[in-house]
Length: 157
Length: 279
Image (cartoon, rainbow over all chains, first blue to last red; front, side, top):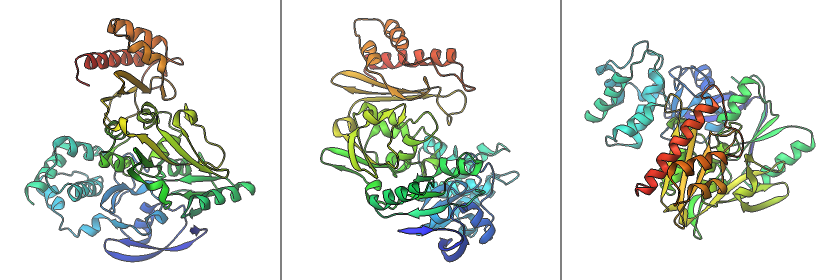
């Protein structure tokens, strides 16, 4: 059994690297990624699980890091936009499709799209793409371009 | 950020989890069982609750089962809505899970969390009530397996310190003809004005509802009204609406009058589809 009380050191696997971080059990994964590991791609938005700006991947699935404790990530594989290294097909597709304006939501969309591709290597039906993308909000309303980027991602790989 | 500290426990067994709860309770310290954590984290962040400890039950094997066993489908309480959907084992439940929150949140929200949550809709209860599911609970007094409907009235009626271990669904429900529709006021991802789930058993429709009242429910009286083949759709729907267990729910999403309008239209459509063999 695990018991954490007060400040504790936990091991996290983030972007292929092992890290040790000192956290309170009530610290959110989003805050630990940003403030302790300096991984600022995941953005604080609504902090309520609605906007998706903080989306990361956990064991290959998209997760909103504002709704997860850092201690829960122990033993799991965390991936943020920094871990894509600028080489993921979705990153080029976003550039080619002009799929961002202010860019605040972009990290979250990149991760949800990358997770979509991870779980569905072949182009899924439109309704599946829509279902996944509905998890994230873009207040610049760049949704059509983001949809186009997803198609480009699949067509280019 | 959560503006206070709590102790985090991750037990490996049901006994450990219940013991932790009992020990804390005996000291007058509030503990909460924690699975996906979406609601607990939000409530902690906003100060609605301030537990002394959270007991993360995701490491307990019995709570994570998702498999067919002994002519029943077992779904552990920490299975996420996405895991349940992806398993494709219970089509009606898959439809219900697919309309709760958004897809990314479905990767965190758990069956147990949805059933025990403070948000009134608890839409995973609908397929379970229709399928005569049983539920296994564990607490300081030990384990018990009972029909879900005996412990789910408006919300989960748990004893102090009890947690959901898993639900068991009889196999007939996994292949039964079924229907699910969720009507929202604006966006597809939203709380329901009305959610209706239906399943066919012995050539009769069973129906359960969320959104139309302040709690989810299955009503056998309403089912009887809606299954009266000799009456018109309008008569059946009107009679069913008169049998609602409490006044229609109203909030900013929809007035009671509007919800009732949507409810009646949805039921009528359901009956037409049923009559036309589309279900």
